[in-house]
Image (cartoon, rainbow, N blue to C red; front, side, top):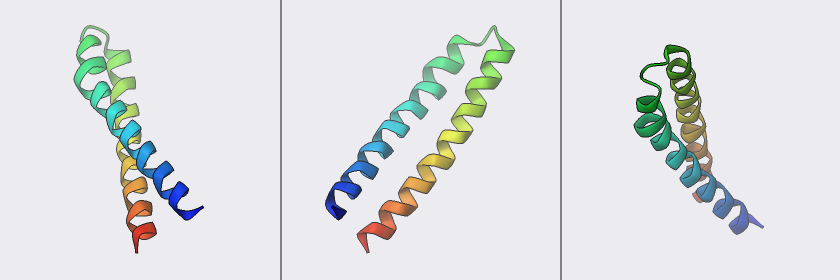
Amino acid sequence: MKDNNLYNMMHQLTQEQKSLWRLENQYTKDAKTNPTLKKYWATLAKDKKVHIANLKAMIKKELK
């Protein structure tokens, strides 16, 4: 089961990184005329960065 957990975390890390890229490179640019939405995307991106850091730490721990 350990191998499956590692796979799941790595897969989720990839999905989170893709989502962060979209938030920073597409959604924020599209919302340039809507300050409320732009702020929302920025907040979501900040949260994604925390999730990514947490996943990286858990993966590193799992690999030891």
